[in-house]
Image: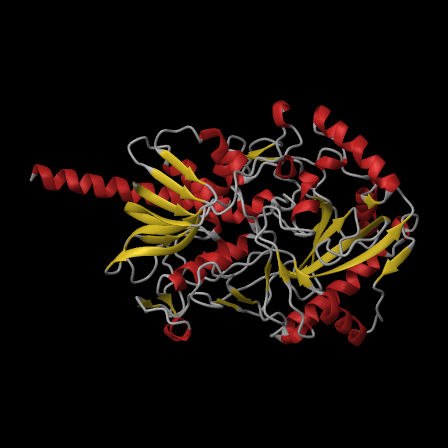
Amino acid sequence: MNFDYVIVGGGSAGCVLAARLSEDPSVSVCLLEAGGEGKSVLVRAPLGIAAMVSARPFAINNWAFDSVPQTELNDRVTFHPRGKALGGSSAINAQLYIRGTKEDYDGWAEQGADGWSFDDVLPYFKKAECNQRGESELHGADGPLQVSEQQSPQKISHAFIAAAEGRQIKRNNDFNGADQEGVGLYQVTQFHREDKRGERCSAAAAYLHPVMDRPNLTVITHARSTKVLFEGKKAIGVEYNRKRSLATVKANREVILSAGAFQSPHLLMLSGIGPADELAKHGIPVLHDLPGVGKNLQDHLDYTISYRSDKADMLGLGVRPGIQLLKEVLKWRKDGSGMVASPAAEGGAFLKTSPDVERPDIQLHFVISIIDDHGRNLYGGYGFGCHVCVLRPKSTGEVGLNSHDPMDAPRIDPKYLSEAEDLEVLVKGIRMTRDIMESPELASYRKEILHDFDRDDEGIKKAIRERAETVYHPVGTCKMGQDGMAVVGADLKVHGIEGLRVVDASVMPSLISGNTNAPTIMIAEKASDIIRSEATIELEHAKVEVTT
């Protein structure tokens, strides 16, 4: 099969690319996705995250990766859920709509990603967005991605906000506004219109599912890409495994990798593009020695403080919570409201750990349930908690190969806390978070703390090493730029290779200050414009050559 564009990965970026590129009826697009269609009720129901992220008793729509043992976390293996379905991680995430700060994107431009400053990317955020609040200088109202107010935030989430305000933290009703700092409720990527109100608006539901019947768009699910095919140093197609058989698709114009921060560099290395020494270890012939592939892995390390509770206005486990959940399911099926529409992480805050910090350096996610080890450790009854993470970590890790077998998972080594400054910031953040959680405004909800720790620096550091985990924001492993460790240029073309781009969170030069789904969708929106603009220019040149 031949197509103009072959896209590997139907996640947040791949869905956007497939939909936008196939808007032109004169081109053909093929999207390869290793998972299914991402239309099940577990995906559509926001609370379905509880059944998918933990990957227990078995993985649903989830790659369920593990890291190598982390030296600074007592040699623990950390768990890394990633979405495996159309929609990718937007099919299993908490749906929080966060962009980061202006300085994040201006920093990208300063690092060599020309054309990716905040002023450059804002139009693409707005192009993607259908915000329930309507259009404004910073928000869009006509895009495919529906951004909604929460349907039924719980009383305890409002109590958390009051607790923070009682600690002199200002209220912020728009974390994507002019100022990120403060406490408030998150907006979420949920449908806010009548027919699907309260359902998850994944990238697939927003962009891809509505256009699957286009004659120039072919979507192949359950297709695991195994390598990019080349003629010399020109990408010409992709080999994939489906139903235990190998097949190929050819690309007349481009192959585009949108497999994510773990799997885009993994596929590049399996195809012979990456650090020569890494490829040699696994007997992979070197097509192009590109040392930055897989390097520069950045992620948000996170610690959760949790409490048991006797109150019932939250999620729980047991007979009484189970009966309550059944009632909530019926409510959600009726009008999209209730706890089933909850992102679980309802409240949030962006805070400065020191007056000397120019912008927030920690983020809080207040959750209406006990979440321990990604929900893999279960507790009866009710409870609540709060996550805290370091927004701009200095520690960087890498993605590599475990073997030359494409069916093996990538080797993931985030190298958490390899820079001491990250630990110091997280210690301050945990102290601030516990202060909020033990405020009078939450007193009626608190029964007992889980995993208590000594409150001095050493006690908090010990707790971090024992329990800190990812909060699901890996980026940077195919970073944009022009330096020796850059993998793609500002046009997202792989350096030294023809006909191959990377379009996903892996191209971020540095981690943004917040959740990464909205920025990934923005990257794909901008990439689509770049690709279509280049194709138009090439067509005009061809016409000129014919006439002359």
